[in-house]
Length: 151
Image 1 (cartoon, rainbow, N blue to C red):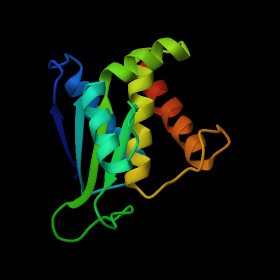
Image 2 (cartoon, one colour):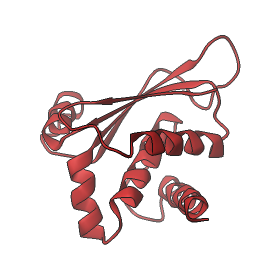
Image 3 (cartoon, rainbow, N blue to C red):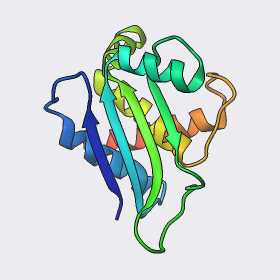
């Protein structure tokens, strides 16, 4: 069983928090990941900008950051949960991107959450080009899991 801890910093408690936790759980199930411990921090753009500058030397707001803990690539079984890492998401940046890309807030939040989980699982991409294997997988998972929600 996976453990998903969600914390908030500099944002109000959203009414969709438990639905969101369930979505992250379904992403892990889809990837056949079990026994992971993930921390998700939902925050504002200023906080993620500070983290981006501190850890990546980029003084700019971004949508999602992932901080893998060691070598947690799709480990399962064993004693206790595997500390997979942390995902940080700037909720206000997600809202802006949803408008910019013409998608719902939920779709963009879920897309960036999948992105963060894939980084924790050891996936990487060199660019934002849609032909990148990781980004193709991200969209495949999003399509599958968003489709499940509609049915």
